[in-house]
Image 1: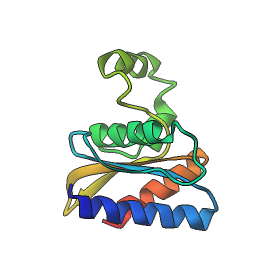
Image 2: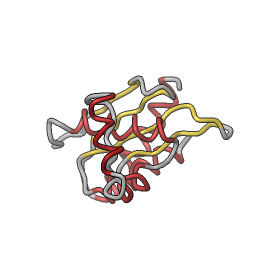
Image 3: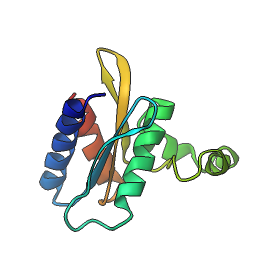
Length: 131
């Protein structure tokens, strides 16, 4: 994951947020979950940098959009609750994260926060698709 790719993904996610009429914060991480870029949207809550990063880390770790995991989190509550003690403050299985693939290989992930879960998901997917 390069800064240039992260910026491209963030711009696409923010463009989708403007279309949806919602402010978002975008975080992009590399394949190991290390932060590459965080862009806090005007008018977003002060926690959105943390939540968007947690969504990005979850998408990178599990190589799937977090929307899929959020839907099963209730069914596998013991697993998701255990993650909090293993990697405190790192992973958030909440809608709004998407893996970023380049030529079929995972290079990182993007997480969005500030809108509704569905808006965050759409923005993350737009960011991932821009790569």
